[in-house]
Amino acid sequence: MESYYPEEVSRRSRFARQAGVPLSFDSKGTGVSLECGVSVRMFLSFSDVEISEARFVSNGCGWAVAAADVIAECVSGAALKDLHALEGLERRVLSELGEVPAGRRQCIRIGLEALRKALADRRASIAEEWSGEKALICTCFGISEETIEDLSAAGTAATVEDVGRLCGAGTGCGSCQMLIREIVES
Image (cartoon, rainbow, N blue to C red; front, side, top):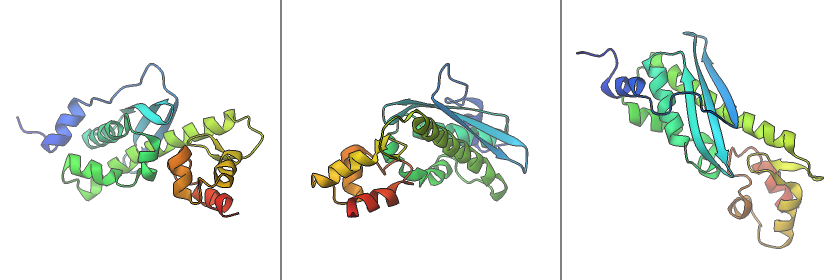
């Protein structure tokens, strides 16, 4: 029987291992394509500083489902510091699925958008729960300005990379690296 999709896309869309809403999750995000009306919702569960599980639901075509399945599979079990602001994830999806026609690239983008929004949802919940007296610098790992100042004052952290190695700050989404640099240089 001939398939409408390439073999890997067809297999992934029919047998998506990461599909479904988990019983519990820590954050969620939605990506939408206004070109075709497809959406992908990504659900993330965390254990300390890693994504313990990523699952998704989609109302989309085989391309959207297959791309979301690859994305969720790639980040499940990944340490936040190893995601490097998700660089290279689109290339990974392309290598898993094979040739993706230009008109179907939005299927990958909506899965990535859902993941980014789920990670942003996680950062927002950490910031909302923050009760420290000092400023919260790294929302990915819940690291305060005081912690970074202490590492710098002790002489163990002279660079953003040192801080990341010691406490994880700056190694998640990377948006706090400029603030970390200011703290260690002052």
